[in-house]
Length: 183
Image 1 (tube, rainbow, N blue to C red):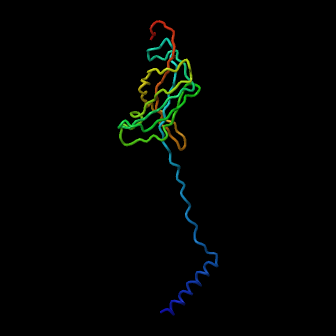
Image 2 (spheres, one colour):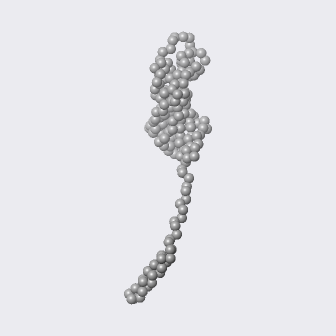
Image 3 (cartoon, one colour):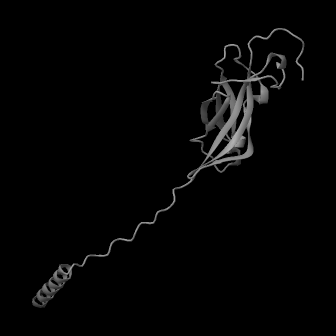
């Protein structure tokens, strides 16, 4: 039997050599399918920070208020067990507006872990020496709740659901004594 296997092996080698000598090459691999990049959907928070005018002190009114550039606010999120799951500080631009992506915020299937239920915006600091005391406008001392206002930012591979917070306000550290606030 070994004598018959040898001629067969030689025959296979000769056929393979003849095929390769005639320019045969295996077919190229199929082209790879280009799948679109995965679109990421992020959550973001935006709002305004003001300095409440002295004549509105003690109220929630922002009549006559000035926007504060460079103010810092924080977004704090807690899960349904009241454990902090996200914390980040954002700074307002030159118009007193802040926009912050909640990158790293993880939602669980529990409905109380949604940003509307679990996140709050709080004042951190004001760069203005004359207006750096916290006010409680929109419950900022406990944390202003976020609102969904059906706003989304969309790009090719990015989408953000934007929640609103506030407006938030600091108040002056010294106001001249005058009549009670007008509404």
